[in-house]
Length: 462
Figure (tube, rainbow, N blue to C red):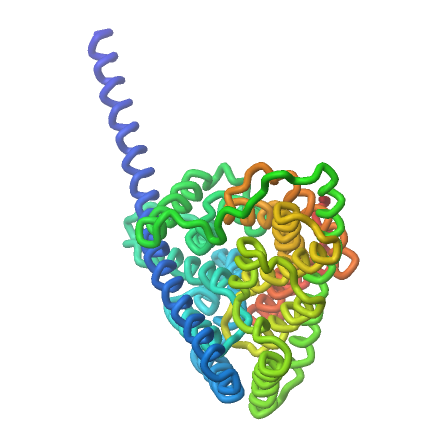
């Protein structure tokens, strides 16, 4: 009798265990499939964006005056595509993902499709490519996050009814992290971004899905693009013991500039909200395009594009230092590109603007190559933190882009200082403001508590 009970108990335990394993496997498969698709789309997007930027470079070296024709045509086309086919494909994409996470509840789940869908994915990529070809000061990294969120959401929708239920919120958050990891080839950055920027849910609830999604998306991108670094290996030998003071000196203006740029963009968006006629938007987009083209033609063509070339030149060539006005150009370029309402992110432009701040201050101080490289990286962390208020994500991203782990404390210091000084400009991040703007547009008066929550929220303690 005892042996029969023991045998029955063993069979029951094995059956329960197998059911649990089956359930866990079925829940994991959608994350794996979506991660693989994200990696493939991110690679295709990366290559197309590089081709668009090469087209810009070709025009620069051929006839710079052509931008007076190309830039207005591209800006108008990119803006029209978004306005006509997918209004929520405009801008970066990160605030849309953040808003989707807020709306991923039974009450508002049907509204998430306006922010994350295959239509949004297609228009997002197409509009940003056109902007990039026209010299727009935008990046592909923020858009990749919205693209990834759309892929993960769509895979979740395709699951049959008998499939084990998966949290829509966790699916979107995991997709965003995978998108960032694939865009920058920075797996740790993707994980930290999910924790620091996106989630208010304890990570233990979806940590396995998050880690595997980041790994699969990143490995897929690496398999096709190679184990590349976004920037490379800058020289960090022989750093001065007192360089911490230089890091702080760069982080303060970089953080203030990042927060200031974001604040001005928000003011422009508020002003544009009063436009009643389509022609007003058309004139605004044309004005932005002509300002950018005129700046490139009459002052410096370095105002054009995402700015990656500026970063690599400051880090890897003898031409490390900038003229005093270059940070102003890199500050103004995103203003006239991002506010058009077309697609395009601010991650890469923010990094290049911060790099120009670090390179300019290094030139004033006549620092060595290694110390200059560190201040360039510190400026990148500082400016991005001023925009996003995610100091750890910014530091980890720049660290993984350059594989220079010996300066991790310098970069974290830059991020923390920039985050503190940015509070002088605004208590909340650029993405937080835009997130609640999207929530107000979609939910309206249905949920005043949801749409007005940030007015009463205090920022988290640093």
